[in-house]
Length: 230
Image (cartoon, rainbow, N blue to C red; front, side, top):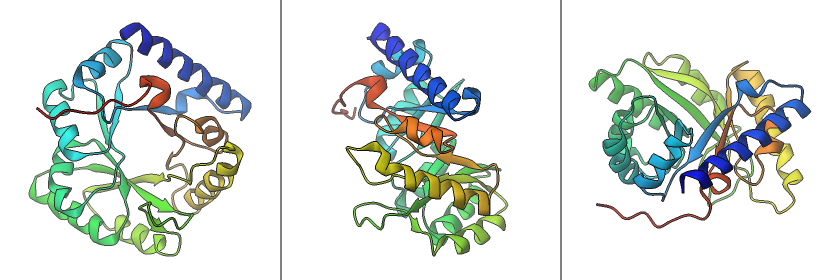
């Protein structure tokens, strides 16, 4: 498994470099998040041995078990799944970065919990919904300015950028306008902020449009496993 992961990681990094070169960027400014949701801690250990240092998780309970076992030394844990407000405290305790902040109310809750838990700083990205898909979370473009203004007043939350999950297209070029628009919004509200966009099937397009964080699962780990809670 370790060799399989090492080869896949090397191939993904090669694709990142190629996409960066194509758009006149430095590949060093793009972080690779290995989307480890549903994969076991054994697989994650193999991934760490193969060079993965940033893991992206969707579910609090699953992440909690993995972080407890694998720890945080030399690792970053990113929450890339929807955060329910009743799980905000656990998220504050667990994650280095939360990509899925989607409301003023959630921002205020996270800020309050950081104060209560004596956490001095928590990196957050605002998830933006540009397609208006009912099945997807995220704040719409109209509501984003209010969230940005509130984040600017937070002492503990560090507003570091924007995140998007565009609709899935077989033709990946159809995702490009969503990535481009998110970059334009980022440039307006937070010049030089992070752009979390692009997954296994479309991360090269996302990089061409300015992605600084790409969330890659299948291209690294292969098909998803079914995670078994202990």
